Amino acid sequence: MPANNDQNFEDFLNKAKSSSRTKWVVVGLIVLFFAALIFVSIDWVFGALVHTRKEVSVPDITKKSITQALNMLATNNLAMKQAGVEFAQDVPPGSILRQIPSAGSTVREGRVIRVWISQGDEMVFVPNTVGSDLRSAQLAVRQAGLLVDKVDNAYSLTYEKGLIVAQNPKPDSMVQKGEKVSLVLSNGAPPASVVLVPNFKSKKLAEATLWASSQNINLIIKEDANSVFPNGTIAEQRPEADSQIAPGTNLEVIVSRRETADNEKSYHLHYEMPQGKNASRVRVVVEDATGEMEIMNETKQPGSKIDLEIPYTDRAAVRVFVDGILVREREVE
Image 1 (cartoon, rainbow, N blue to C red):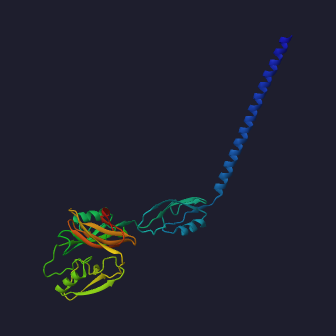
Image 2: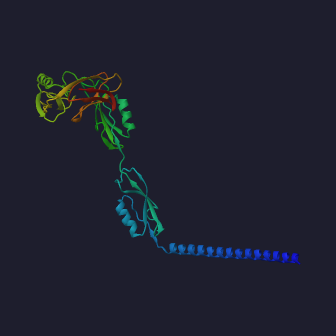
Image 3: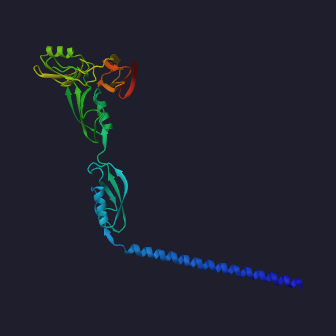
């Protein structure tokens, strides 16, 4: 009798488990049905919403400012997104260079139009070709993304025959990529019938006075009380060195006549340019308690000598840069 009771109880448990599994299967099927129903409903609703949006034509917003482009797109219920920036010669900076979808395309309201913004013309630095031979100068110009316009010839006291004596635009100026650069090639020293102005910068006034007298040139002297050059030395000249000048014309020099401090001293800088093929840009700066001053910024030939009297107060650092590289630094006191 007890054995029958155990069997009956076990049958009862099995039926209960089977009934429970059936219930959960039914519940799962019901949940899946409603999930599918909700998904289909949402998809239908969104599809209906999208397809109820009007179709509009994409306006042409190229060459328009960002503000103008946004206003034009807003009129058609369209949006805009920046996809990138690019250089462009004919489109002002900050204007739309190109767009996707293109102008005239038919899209539905709410579409995002991708645009590329113009950065304007690409700007590049003009290389310094002064002192280089013609082939090297032409190569430097092309490598900078510029074009050689024309090559003129001129006599020079500073540069030997076959080297570049001048260029336009000036070295280190910024111009649009593709601009033209004019070069002037040295014909060497002039004949006796041609008079060229020597380089008097950083020289004593007496040297310019003596030369002007010997060449029957009118020397016009002006003074600069704010010059960084030592008193009595020439800071600027007009015309510039190597310019052709005729007897009876004027040479204007600006002489340093600045006030000197009681504790001002002078340091004589002597530097010889290394031998090489091309000329180099030389900068001489001095830094003391009053700040940093540029004493020289010129192109110098290989092997040429630099002799400067540099004023300073208290302790100072004198630095010489050749083509942007520091080649000498001297602490003076």
